[in-house]
Structure formats: C-alpha cells, structure tokens
Length: 124
Image (cartoon, rainbow, N blue to C red; front, top):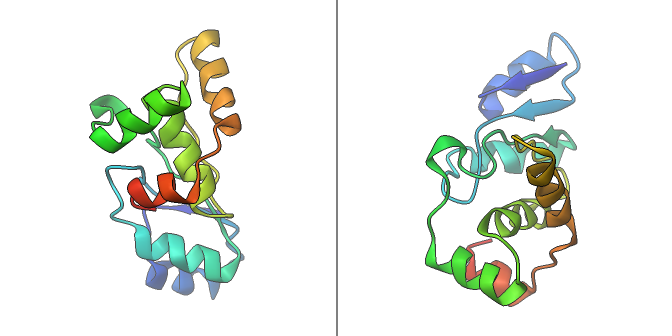
C-alpha cells in the first residue's frame, strides 16, 4: 500500500496496520517541506514518489538551476529531475507530461549526471 502527504509518524502508525511500500508527497527543488519524510523512507527502505517534481503549475525558478542547466546543455526541468534522482536512492519522481516531446525530455533527464559540486550548489 502507498500513502500520500504523510509524516514519518503517520507512516509508522499505518505500518502497524498494513505493509507500506511507497509514499507520495509533494517534493521538488523549491519545496522540501517533506524532507523528514524522505529521510524516514530512506531509513526504512520505502519508495518516495514526489509529485509535482518540477514545481507543478508554478514551475521552478532558481539561478543555480538555470546555471547548471546551461552548463549541462539541458533544461531546468531536466536538471530538477536529475537532482531528485541523485538526491536519494529511494526517489521515484513522477513528472507529468503533456506531449511525446515532453515525455522524451523527462526521460532524457535520467542521463544528466550532476557532479558533487553541482549537487552542493543546488543544495543537495
């Protein structure tokens, strides 16, 4: 079973009733409210599926993202997805797509490899 928008305490309570395998909370470069839940999922080996991984309708705005995207010859959204993928081994981003081109762009983000310095500059 999976849970959405939950804290570590809520996950622990639910796990007393039913096995939990994934958590789906809003999480992205600009919105890290659920950082403690991500850490809990890492400790417990649970999948963490961030929704709105590229900011949803608000998008993402960051000089660091833009500079990294330019350096990597990638889009800001590709860098944001790459950042998520490299941020945690339990991270399973679920970006939305509006076209085949958008889907291909999202998939290509998995090939964007960020250096340790780039991750540090991005706050991860």
